[in-house]
Image (cartoon, rainbow, N blue to C red; front, side, top):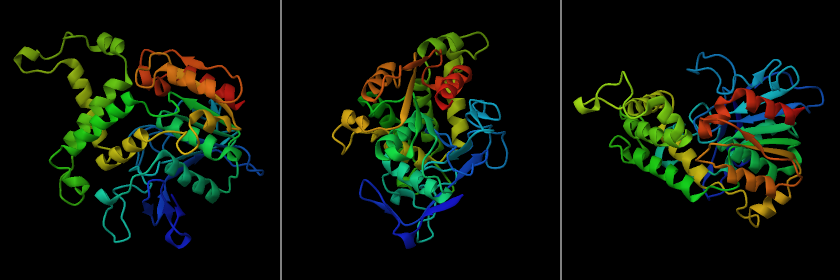
Length: 356
């Protein structure tokens, strides 16, 4: 971890008007930074990811890295060649300053944590790059919420990115995406244990609301075809719903919801969901076309053919707005939006083609 913004340097002024006196960033690295500091690759996680992009489960990390197959010796992001950095995002709950962190009065921020945007998160990542002495990234790579931050890096800091990989995202949040995120936020806030966001130290947490939010999200991350194939209406072996049992799909959604509540903070889920709702690379820059016209990095865009949350038309729009004529890459998957995390062979080949 590194303290990248401190009160004695003026703290961090946020896009929405709030501020944070001190910001600490948790990050992991792989590989070695070369003498010219020109081989650094920044990897940016999605909503419920963290800095543990690669490696086995261990202390502080209940599961293996979320992109474990893509990062490592000889992998698409080859740690024999590149110095790879993955930070936990501002507003998160895996070591970087977020709602559960202590405010200057030594009490958790809770409901006092300010609104943060994707642009604010990138400001913190810029401070981390400065802390590490990296003036320009060889590449910045990310999907979904991570892809939003890649776009902000390219538009807001064009001289600091040589190459960029953008997966499964658009130039701005759509009404459909905002609606789904907003329902998830409402589910958490409706939990009686939420306590207005100040549940720390009460002995309770809004785990039911968070689990429900995750279930709503999980449906949007996958495809109806996949869910039907795997679970159907009442597959063999499921408890009979007529006798009080669950449909298999209900059990699946409950499992994912319960799993998240063991590793993620509900307030962070809200803060990051709101940041995603506010995503608009063209805000204050004359719109997305003008904002992306100034990008200097070599940007490659890929989408998931079956993605119903971030449909392919959004990546097609990005590819048209970005300079150059690099074609859009389509990742074929039955798994919808989650394909950028699951289709390791296709995604790895795409990423490797950009980095080499």
